[in-house]
Image: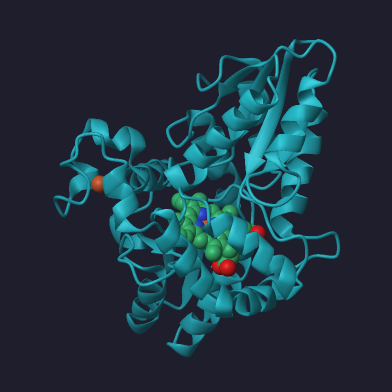
Length: 340
Ligand SMILES: C=CC1=C(C)c2cc3[nH]c(cc4nc(cc5[nH]c(cc1n2)c(C)c5CCC(=O)O)C(CCC(=O)O)=C4C)c(C)c3C=C
Ligand SMILES: [Fe+2]
Ligand SMILES: [Fe+2]
């Protein structure tokens, strides 16, 4: 038995589709200063306003995609944990940044296991964003410090450029592309432009040129947008797609700030108007299907596409528990983190 253990971390879901549970979840999520990055009084005020209407709308959206066993995101993540556990001679736990099972419970459970000296902390995000990766790492560090846990926390960074991730994406999506399509849309979760600028260590690269993501820069080490572009490029090159067969857009905008463009909603409508009949949509910012893929794309974008003249929108499933993805994760757990 190794002295290493693994903690998979994802974003999290409400405990149920009851409005009160969704409100509690949204409050915890949006009051995170890495997500709504305003000083506390302004954040409290803005989130208070969002919580007037959003919980009811989101509860209805969650209810439309909820499974008998629970939230798709949590159920799929649990399957991944179990499949990974079956391949490894080290304990594997699952944690969510918001809601349950919490990062605190996961770390305490692993630290109490006999012989565990190191926890490999694996945030399940291919691209870096402070609102996903940094906040998860800070929470894990807080738990280790607060409980004085005698473990080494080793973080596996965002894996957008790791061949194992791209290979698994190709293996899981290729059969869907082989069914034929008029256009392939890569729809990534969006981010406020401000988040991108804040993450730019040069202070002068991101969003300062129309083609910033195509110009090599040290800023790309923490640029969510550039990492989405590079995953898309790697995938389309591997699949041998021409540039006119695909496009890239960003979904899930919330609030009045400017978010990174183009927006998925606008692109879906444009594609239908341009005569695209069979549209495939991939969402590579998510490793597991969730409300953002199943409801926002699989239901709402599909309806919008058909109303605008399209015939069929096919949502390509996320990596979920695809065997090749599980093999990749297992390899990362056994080797040096981030090296595979
Ligand atoms: C300011 C708001 C938000 C930022 C910034 C944000 C970044 C971000 N989120 C994900 C991944 C997921 N987000 C999910 C749900 C979700 N996201 C926001 C808002 C922001 N996300 C909200 C309010 C919600 C809840 C649903 C809703 O009311 O619309 C989920 C799915 C959760 C589930 O239970 O299924 C994921 C996963 C990324 C990758 C990201 C930054 C790049
Ligand atoms: Fe989100
Ligand atoms: Fe860029």
